[in-house]
Length: 102
Image (cartoon, rainbow, N blue to C red):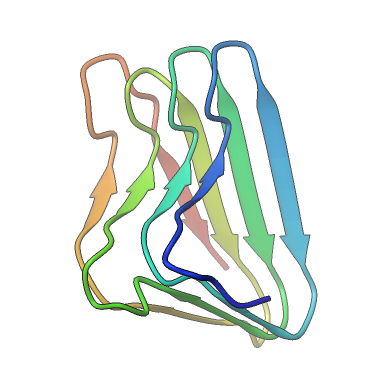
């Protein structure tokens, strides 16, 4: 999957849940990655193989839990994650950030 200048947002509205499990291949996002981006939203991205490239444009931030959302990024096994800009955990009051690396 390759981006086109757009962000990838998991859990972008209240009471929503979004889960991505990547086991191989390449996911490249040109702009920002937001995981758990809204109040009472849950977002989860687990990668156990392949590569995740975010901010491929060198400009988009990575947000794991913002605006009161619950976000988790889990990296396992031989997976690769490359982020080319800022990364924020728990970006606003009430955020419940959790990042797990294995």
